[in-house]
Length: 398
Figure (tube, rainbow, N blue to C red):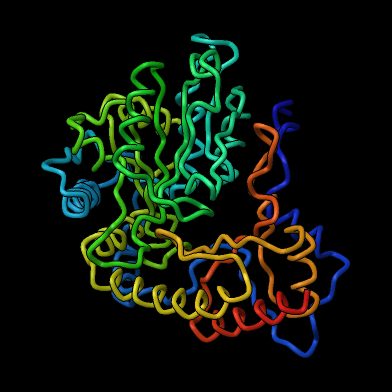
């Protein structure tokens, strides 16, 4: 077996299972899981109908590049959503089976050990663990930029020395951020683009939470939109990753896309052709329907806004927590260690949350996830309100 597999850490949810292995939730209360970011809102009926009505497509092998109809639906959505003048759906868009597998695959396609036998991949800290695993299995060294509340979760590029930046071949960013909810500003993007130009690395922008925000008039800025505003309409060195999972409540469809630098996507398509990662034809048809409709997305945001307003109002008087810029997580500071908070909360109130230290690594003499927990407000409004009351009650008892 590949010896690099030995470098992979357990997934955060495995660590949580181990933490809670000897704990029993309060039997008087119904358990409420808020530890995993799995959308729970119902899948829109029109998407399910489009899937069922396309089942005849199972009789044919799909092309890795996807259908022209799907690529065009994604391209036109990108233009509408981000105010882009033109997206070439043939060369700048590629459907993928959910953003997760593509975020992993991009490191395998980008990292070039011939260019440098000791390449570096940079990611935010805390982070989505796929970034780290992808780097390690591609033969690269992960390095981390701490995102902390004292800097409003803005990355400080000076945390890494110049000799490290010279070895960087790929940098993952996540905006809106998981778990912080931070949305990168135009100036942050400007600095990152300049850094990528100087050191010739690829930017992999994970934007799977881009459609969950709280002010309809203020959608989060995306990488392609920032590039366009800054005169980089060729999207050089940029690949954006997006998904229908959170936007349309279809995590089981495994449907997303990558978009950006046409030259890079041409090579990535070649890689994926060998990988065998074509999207199922019925899923492609259902995805076309989803990307072409915004009404269900507006309603989805309304439900999240309702839950966040209720939960934050209940928690803020007793817990250090604020509304995020976007996404569906609360990133709360705990009055005791994050692991102790999570374990005791589960035992006393039957609510499971994820310790922040499981989502981060020790870097620059700190773990930025310590003494924080990630609370995923994905359940119903009633369950989220009930869990907020339980968390508040527990916190007051400490």
